[in-house]
Image 1: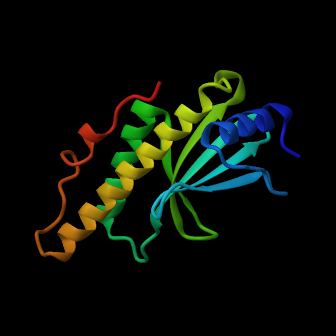
Image 2: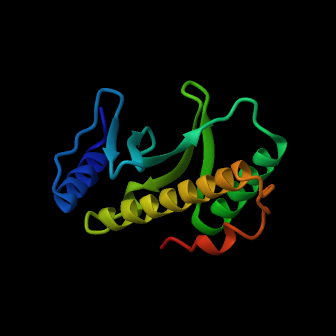
Image 3: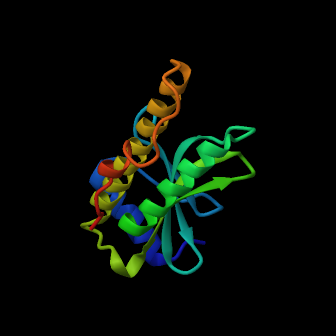
Length: 156
C-alpha cells in the first residue's frame, strides 16, 4: 500500500495534468506522455517517489564504446541532476531514474518536477537516437564529451 504522502502527490499530479492516476498493487503508476516518453512513478518503501523513464532497450551485445558513453552520461546526470541511468535486467530496459523524497516536493511543485524529469528523458532519447543514426550512416562513432554535456541543466 502506498504511503499517504505518495498518494497525495500522485493525486496532486493527477489534478495538474487533468488525468486520473492511481498506483497499482505494486505501487506503480505508468504515464505515457507522448509516443516516445513513458514514465513509471513508484512509491518506494522509504516514503520516496521513484521516477523511471524508459530510454531504450539494452543492446546485446553492448559495444564497449556504448558502455563508456552510458557510464559517462550517468556520471554527469548524477553530478548535475541527481539522476542516474540504470538497466532493468528483467526487461532489458535502459532507464533514467530519479528519487524524490516526498517531504522535499510540494503538491504545487510535483507537476513541474515530473515535467523536468520528462524533459531529461526526451534529451536522452534524442541523444541516443542521434548517436545510433550517426553510426548507421557511417559517420563513425559519436564523441563522448561533446554531444550531451550542454544538453543537461541542473534540476531545481
